Structure formats: structure tokens, C-alpha cells
Image (cartoon, rainbow, N blue to C red; front, side, top):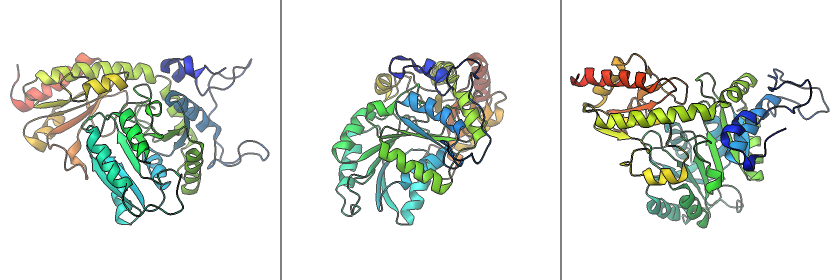
Length: 393
């Protein structure tokens, strides 16, 4: 028996959604179905169009977000599928410090005449809506697309953003964009469904790199899209099948298993992230800390209102630019120097090392806080900062 989602906490939903019926003698966990094809006459025919193992993970993520979910081969596959539903020429307003993969995709499609896009500071609500108004009134509205998803333009939000952790007013921006005839997508990867539910704040579509916090163990590539709009879900299912952007059964099974502990992992990591952020503020080798849980963060009050915690990501700047930031990474022994985020292990990287991140401060380090003992993490961070700055105490 599945829990009644409207009156069950996210922690309980994460444990119970996506399980098989509780019949006598039946397994508690869903089976890993390793078959590309199925006997005719049933609900499944071919694994490019559906696999029972996907469906458990889709039930869990959809239930947590308050919509219906489709899984994809990766987060970028999920993002690409949403963008590909736009009529030509598409019009997109996107966070200036959104995930670099999203911005690179939009730039590529723009160069090929597929769409036009504008970047904005998503924390500046009035400015975002002013740009949306300009985009919505731009001549060249796709013909014959009235009423279809994205026909009036698309506002693509992240909150918190990657890696500057800016906070968007999702409810106000969704309402404002809808008033201009635009649809709204929120990349909820950094917050996760237990941190915030954008569909409940008015967004039309939510995307996830489920590789990250949802699966939580740095061992799968998988993406997810959630919506309450049946026609959008149908379009996305078509894109997934035609483009072959389907997740593997093993990846789906691992992601579902990892998501069972989502609430526990995120609670622990968010608590540690807050502790580390407060200590980083006091360290003489750190010039700026980005974390919405700090009262000095410009989006603190907004994050407190719309998020259930302040997240597991902390970014901070060290003086001396890229060279100093790299030296901090080299001096670490416990925190893993690697890209990605959301695993049980803490990860750190100089984000500006990647193409497309040239606008990021050169000395900025982005850290995904894992579930290790926070005192061990701080011991490693502080000794690395001390060693680089010569401020050993």
C-alpha cells in the first residue's frame, strides 16, 4: 500500500514510494528488470519506451515533487528534452550563473537559430520580470504554437544557483512570468525535493540531475523531469523515446535505492554545511562565503521562506585567485577534489576551471558537503587554508 502523499512527510514518502504492492509473499523492494523487450499483450513492450524499474524511481521523485516524473539517461538529457519541446524559434530567459551545461546547450541552439536567450540575475525579481516582458513582446512568436508549452517564452530558474547560490523568489517569478504568457522551469538539483517543491510554488516543470543529491552515492548518471501538465509529460516521453535518452535499469534501481535515505543524508549534510559556512566566515584566509543559511546572505530571508533547509552546497573565495584556490585543493587530504555534488563524500573544486565559467571569481571554491563528521571536515579545510595563507594558528 502506498502512503497518502498529501498527508505524509517527505522522509516517509522517500522510504515508501515506488515499492511493489504489499501482498503476502511479495518482495519488499522492486525487482531489477534487465530485459530490453517483453512478451506482447502487457503494459510494457520495449525498454526504450518503458521499464518497470524506472517506474519505481519515477513514482518516488514525482511524489516528492507533487507531480508526475519521467527519468532520463542524465541530467543533461532531461534538460535537453525540456528545451527540445520549445517551438521554433524558442525564447528563453535563464539565470546568468545557471549550470554551465544548460548555458552551453542554449548557446549551441542559439548559434544554430533554434532559439534566442537572455541571461538575468534571478535574485533581482523586478529585473527578471522586466526582461521577461521584453522577451514576451519580441516579434517572431512561433506560428501555430498558441497554447503549447513555451510558446510565449520560457523562464528557466535555478534556486540556489550554481555556484553562487543566489536565491530566486520562485513564487513571485512564476506568477509574473505566467502573467506575461511564459512558462517556468526550475532546476531543483541543488535544493532537492525535500528542500523545496517548485511545482507547489507555481512552476510548470522541474528538472533534476538525479545523479546528484537524489541518488546520493556518486555511482550513477540519471536525470528526471517532473510536471503536473499531461501534455508536457506526453511531449517529454516522445522526446525521450525518439532521442534514445533512456536511463539504464541498473542506474534506475541504484538511484531508487539511494533516494530512500534522501532526507537523512540531506539533513546531515545541510547541518554540516551551515557549521562549515559559519566557520569559513571567520577564517582569515577566506574573503567571502556564499551560503543562504548565513544571515548576511542577501537571499537568506527568501530561502528561509521557501526552503525547508539551506542546502548542502557552500561556495567561498580565497585571495590570490586561481593559483591560491588550487593550492587549497592540493593541501586537502579528506575532502575529495572532484566535480559533481550530492554524494555521501564531500567534494570540492575550483569552479572557474571549467569552460563557460569565466565570470566566476577566480578564487572561488565550490564545496558539496557530505555526511562525514563535520569536525573532521573542518579540520581538513582549516589546515589547508592555514597552509596556503601562512596563518597557521
